[in-house]
Length: 147
Image (cartoon, rainbow, N blue to C red; front, side, top):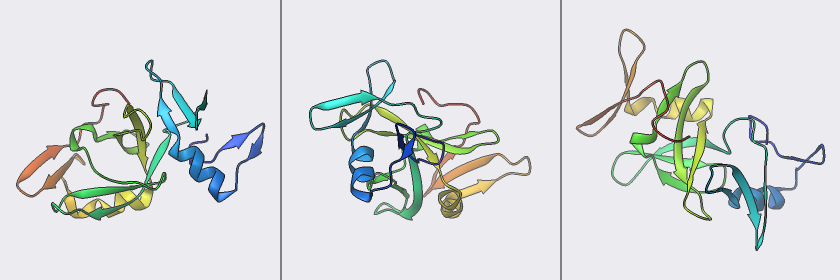
């Protein structure tokens, strides 16, 4: 999997929409944190250049906070404690996998970062704070736990 989420198998791009959907739905992490993909009872390790998932867009959730629209088709609330800004790469967070519930790293697309602006305050030094209602979450520039 390349940094933009493109998948290749044997050097050829995987392009069929249903195959891509099935592979993304089967993304998981081993107990050691290695990225895997499964279809039915079959699974394998995959090489991931960046994060296995991407946030394609952010929408306002039922509680007024941001919800992630992921490239695996899910819509999940942003776990604010997992959000961090990777210098020169942009925002990242973690979400549970569909398969085991283990954490998977997620990269925000440019659009998703722009969608997050209504919840952001940026200070004069460029440091961001996520504001959801009355709760403020400073956005660290180093990983907040496993990524």
